[in-house]
Amino acid sequence: MTAPEPAATAPATEERRSWLPMVCLFLAQVLMSFNVAALPVSLGGMVEDFGVPPTVVSSTIVVYGLVVAALVMTGAKIGQRVGWVLVFRVVVVTFGVSALLMILSPTVGWAIAGQSLAGASAAIIVPALVALIAENYRGAQQATAIGALGSARAISGVSAFFLGGALGTLVGWRPVFGIVLLLAVAVLAFSFTLRSDGGNADVHIDVVAAVLIGVAVMLLTLGFNNLNTWGLFYATPDAPFDVGGVSPAPVLVLCGVVLGQTFFWWTRRRMAAGEVPLVDLSVLASPRERAAVYAMFIIVALEGALNFTVPLYIQIVQGRTPFDTALAMMPFNLTVFVTATLVVRFYRRYPPRTIGVFGFVLTTAALLWLSFVVTNNWETLPTILGLFVFGVGQGALVTLVFNVLVTAAPTSRAGDVGSIRGTTQNLASAVGTAIAGALLVTLLSFNVGRAVVEHVEIPPSLVAQVDLDAVNFVSNDELRGVLEDTDATPEQVEAAVEVNEETRLDTLRLGLLILAGVSATAILPASRLPGYTPDEIPDPETSGGPDPEPDRDGRSRV
Image 1 (tube, rainbow, N blue to C red):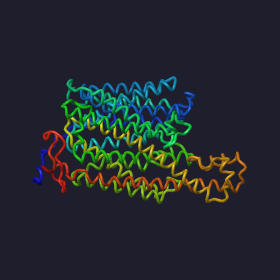
Image 2 (image 1 turned 135 degrees about the vertical axis):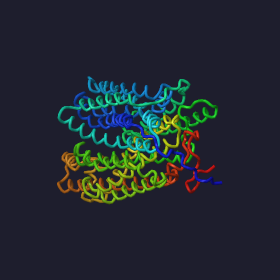
Image 3 (image 1 turned 60 degrees about the vertical axis):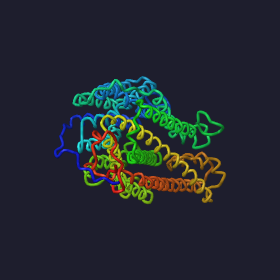
Image 4 (image 1 turned 180 degrees about the horizontal axis):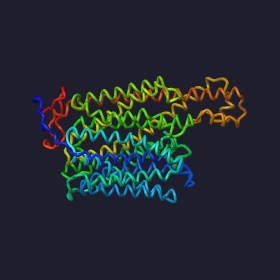
C-alpha cells in the first residue's frame, strides 16, 4: 500500500550557521588532495635528491594510498570513541608533522615514513569531514558543504600541478610540502570554530573486522596497481613471485575479494548478535544507498582512468611536461570544481534519480565523443569540449551520491558514511587507474601485432631485433632512437613510426569507447537512486535510520 506523500518536515525558515567551520573542512580536504597531487610532481626532484630509482620514490604514493584505504574504517570508529573535533585536531597536527618529515628528509626512507604518517592521518580526516559537516550544518547548507568537498579535490589538484611545477623548477621539490605544512597550520587554526558532541567511550573497535578489511583493501589495491608490472595473468620477470607461473596480481585481487566477503559476513554476524560493528551496514540497508555506493565507485573509477590516460599520452607519448598536463586537464578540473559547487541548486527541483541518470548520460556521451574526435593532440576544441562535458557529469555525480548517503543517515552514523566513502573512493581510484593501464597496454599489444603483419615494409627480422610487439607507449622520437641501433632502412624506420602513431591512436579511441560502455552500464544503478526531493522525506534523525523504501513513483512506502 502506498501512503500519502509525507509532508515537509523542515522548518519554514532554516537556521543559517556560520561558514567559518566549512572553511576549516574545505581546507582540510585541500590539505589531503594537495599532498596527493604534489607527490607525482615531486618525483623527479626526489629521484635526483636521494639518488634512488623512480620505482623506489613512487613508494611514497603507494604507501599513502594503501594506509588511507586500509585504516579509514578504523579511523571512523576512533573518531566516534574519542570525539570528532579532538581527534580531528590531533591528526591535523600529525599531518603537519608528516609535511615536516618530507621537507627535512635526508633519505627516501624518511619520505616514505612521512607519507605513511600522512596516510594514517587522512584515514581519520576523511570520515571526520563527513561527521563534522553533519554536526555543523543542516538542509541546504549541508548539501552546499558536501559540494564544496568535491570542488576542493578538483581545485587542489590544479593548484598542486601549477605551484608544484613552478616551485620544483625554480627552487626544488621540498618547498612544495612547505605549502602542505602551511595548510595544516591554517586548518588547525580554523578547527576552533567547529562544534561537535564529545566522544562515546562505549564505542568499541572490532579488531577482527579492522584486520579483515584492512588486509583486504591492501591486497586489492596492490593487486590492481600491479596488473601491468606483474602481469595480467602470467607472471612477468618483474613479478616478486609467481603461483605456478600465474602472476601474483590477480591472486592478490582474489584473496582481497575473499577477505572482503569475510568482513561483511563477520560484520552482519556481530550486528545480529547486538554487538557494535566496525561499520554500521544499516547505512546501506536500502537499494538506494547501495546504488549510491555503486554509482560512486564507477564514477571515481572512470575519473581515475581518465586521469591516467591523459598524462600517459601527454607526458609519455608526446614527451611534454607535467605543467602541460595541468593545462590540458584544466577544462576538466575547473568544470568539476564549478559543477560540484553549483549542482546543489538543482536538488530541490530534481530528485537524485533524475540528476544521477542525466550525469551518467553526460559522462557516457563525453567518452563516446572523445573516442571519435580525439587525436594525439589534447588541445583541440573537440577534445576540450569532451573533457568539459565529462567534468560536468563527474562533478555532479560525485557530489550527488555523497549527498544521498549523508542525508539518508542520522548524524550518529555520519562517521560510518564517511568511512564507506573513503574506502570506496580510494579503492575505485586504484581500480580505475590499474584497469585503464592494463586495458590500454593489452589493446596496444594486439594492435601493434596486427599492424606489423599488415605492413609489409617491416620485415620479421626487424621485429626480432627491436621486439616491436613488446614496445610500450613511446613517442616517435624514442622509437627512432631504438631503431638507430638496428639495420633498418629509412623507409622501414618511417613505416615503424607510422605503425606507432596509428596503433597508439586506435588504442586510445578503443579504450575510451570501452570506458563509455562502462559509464553506460552505470545508468542502471543510477536509476535506483531516490526519486524524492529533500522536502518529501522524513528527517533521518527522527525516523531513526535510512528513509523508507520508495515506491515506483518515488514516494515513501510503508
